[in-house]
Amino acid sequence: MTSRGPAADGAILRLESLGKRYRPDGPALFEGLELELRPGEYLAIMGESGVGKSTLLNLLAGLDAPDTGRIWVGGTLLSSLSDDDRTLLRRSSVGFVFQAFHVLPYLSVEQNVSLPLELMGVARAQRVPRIARMLDAVGISALAHRQPRELSGGELQRVAIARALIHEPRLVLADEPTGNLDARTAAATLSVLRSQIKAHAGAGILITHSLTAAQSADRILILDGHGLKPWVPAA
Image (cartoon, rainbow, N blue to C red):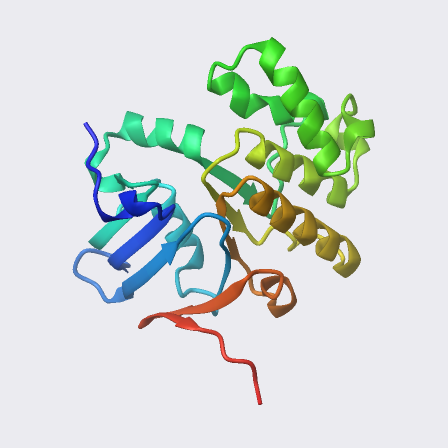
């Protein structure tokens, strides 16, 4: 049974007084985080190493539980879900893009992109045209039958983006997706990621150390031990 509440007003993501500690009796990693994302919003979060950026992504995905506060994804309170229900929510409503790609080496490009749809039980007749459209959207249609070992880093990241977005998730979480790419390839990859999030009216969060990467987003927030603060350009 799920609990629906304030985020049912149309917000894709809402954080209320979110906090996480290093250990139950230890200091806070962060606390008091407040955030709302609505359809079409693309946010970048920056912060120094160790402030909890990856931990925050794990919380948003329901892979970890906060010590204080609440997280709503698409109107559903994560803490109200069982482990199995959180898995189903991730499978249907969340897309992940990682620095290390996590493309399966023994599957072709087309097969990698197809995985989320297969896990959701989408019939092959429906999968095939969707995959073709997505590969075209991220510019790798010609690579559909290639193996990952035949691809460049930029191509592999486009495969990862296509796989993350093929099921049209409400929330896309990207953790340093351009960390292994050169500047030109990174810029092109971020452009694809942004355009596809916008095209599917989802919401996206980009975690990055790079200000250049962060500036591809609609707005930038800085995470520290006191919360999320708007980034202010240097004078």
